Image (cartoon, rainbow, N blue to C red):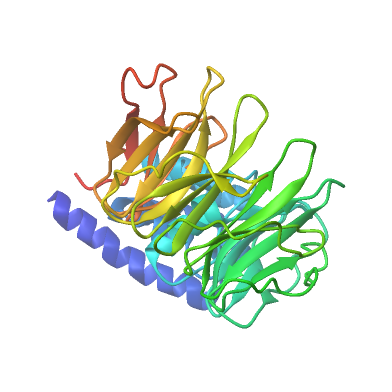
Length: 371
């Protein structure tokens, strides 16, 4: 009977979702949104609903988040993910569930302008999604190739730029207020750019890091658009993920993950590798994230298509914990309450890490997992 009920919910969900998309989300009343969220939760397809074309720009954020919070544990986790960059936050539709998860959890960038949030869409579009204050959202920021990564880049004067990495090997900087490019494209990579990240250095300086399928990481001055230092080389395959790792003493490392399953740590001030490659994943590393603990330490989390998340001490390079997921890991993000959200398949798991690591592994609770 349970299977019949879920299948029925899936069928009704598909029909009503199609109707809402055709009619337009702005015409769907709050009760209709709540009903669709309930059907999606029953069918295990909340991620698909939230990624539906037009939903995030057509439905009031408060209505959607209220509906998600009322849809059980899975809905509350999705609401937390959407809130992770500061309300409201979301992603635009992209091809592939893995890309949608990655955008929602690690690729989106809050870029000011009244809470404006940017994400990548198909066909080279970087598009603002939600805003709670004027000015209006404006038009999509369009380039010449598929956009694979976005990141907010805070500047010393208090302003913020948006960086995007593209399949054509370029990095673009944008003014999120005007929607105009900030300077010329950054064109050093010889293959598609799969990751971008802001790196805040001591003294208030910010660098932009980009990782490409050419196996290199490049550092840029986001104000001048000039490359900083030499390419960071050492990966034997394409770079898929980047994150800055602030350490308790005030210094910052840069972590990169790539297709051969390794993670590298770099000193962004010298461009030199720090320690040996972090090995253990058996498939490519799709996501990396810095995870501060209550005791003041910062860990590095890496997620892989091998279905595992590994936790590292960036100061020693030692693995201090790990846990498994039922499917390939696409994204990792730190939620506002300090928990770690892990996106895999069409699901999100939330883990609270213990401060006594590495004495014991973290415990986790998941939403939407197959049972």
